[in-house]
Image (cartoon, rainbow, N blue to C red; front, side, top):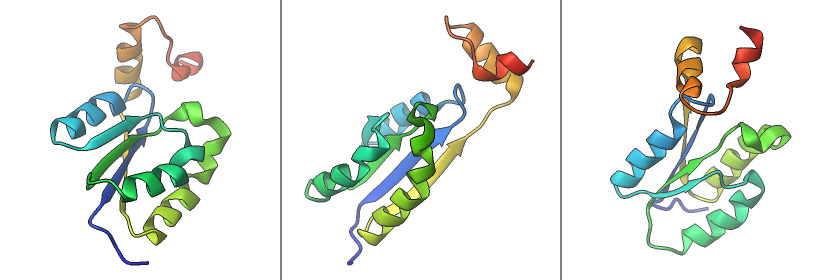
Length: 115
């Protein structure tokens, strides 16, 4: 299939590593951003976005996808086959920084169980 000028950045990573801030920054630069789009909807979303004027898209994906995360490599391959330039950004942070960020919220970070 012919390449489009559309770029899709999939932003993922550890809980608390800054995915939300990254998406906000992409939005500040004019990207069409969607946080927590279920992986099961990526195919329909890609068909929808292909006919829109937005050329730069950023999508947030996180651990809440659970077992469906194993489908991400196939989804990326399908997006590329559909003509999208596709990039994955994986955000990370130190364990102490992740715990610190979660201590500022009401939630416990999953790694706190092992500390």
